[in-house]
Amino acid sequence: MFFLIYSTSDQGFKEYVPSEEDWEKVAGVCSFLKVFSDVTKVVSGTGYSTSNLFLSEIRRVKKIIDKKAIDPNLHIREMARKMELKFEKYWGETNLVMAIGAVMDPRFKMKLPAFCFPNLYPIASDSETNLSYLGNALTDLYLEYCREEKDASKEKNESEISSSDANFMAEHSEIPQGINDYESFIRESGGILEPTKSELEDYLSEKIVAPTSKFDVLAWWKGNSSKFSILSKMAADILSIPISTVASESTFSAGSRVIEPHRSCLKPETVEVLLCGADWVRELYGLKKAKQEEDKEIVIHLD
Image 1 (spheres, rainbow, N blue to C red):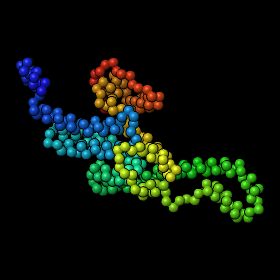
Image 2 (cartoon, rainbow, N blue to C red):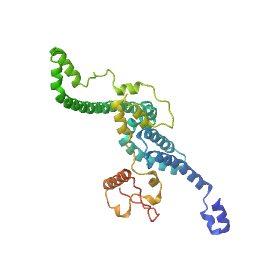
Image 3 (cartoon, rainbow, N blue to C red):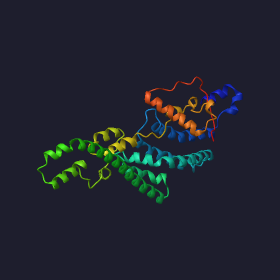
Image 4 (cartoon, rainbow, N blue to C red):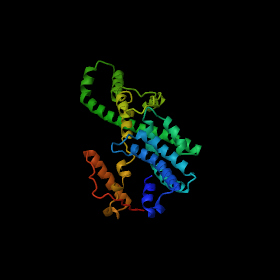
């Protein structure tokens, strides 16, 4: 509208007025990028989201990229295919953590990966293989937490037994030696026999919590820590892993480029270390970035 009004007052401007075709292209690009804007706000906001939210958002990105890769408009297709190459590279490096994070949400468990994987892995055999791999990785990770818990418990019991062993033997000297041996075994093992079913199996076999957007997954695990003592520790570690260390405000702001002129000669790995370290320090001490004096776009190609 404003372009048309301006063209009537300045005849020389007519040749620069966008055509209907140009506006259609702009509308197509905007609708395409809106999905990325929405997803970015979820996965890289200043107050980091828990990792249970990432998998469904990544599926959303994959779905829109696949759709736009066969779009009738050539410029949209070319944009989508370039994005697809980047997406495949990044997804291959982060899928397992995001999938485990999703399983640690009692609203999702293994159902969300089963829902998302067919989109992320279009070949059915690949989807099934990755679901199986996810299940094995979950089990291995849980067993590692169990071993750590058992070692810590054994260390604690040994220190307690060494200090009270003399008193225990004196008080129970009249009890037959066979009973003493059994009681020693019970005390050394923490007094609890190995359960027939693990916490992970119990958790996955229970019904999912009714899906709702207003759900505090960390509060749920805190409330169920007595029931899932080991699994709750594992969930707390997994859910705290961020998918990105770049805030969404910086991602979509031309004046907040993270690569400044004096950093342009650094290797990508060095820049990544500097940015991650600075971001973690700001998060730890509650600091905010200073507003840049100049609001101009800086594009540096590191490749």
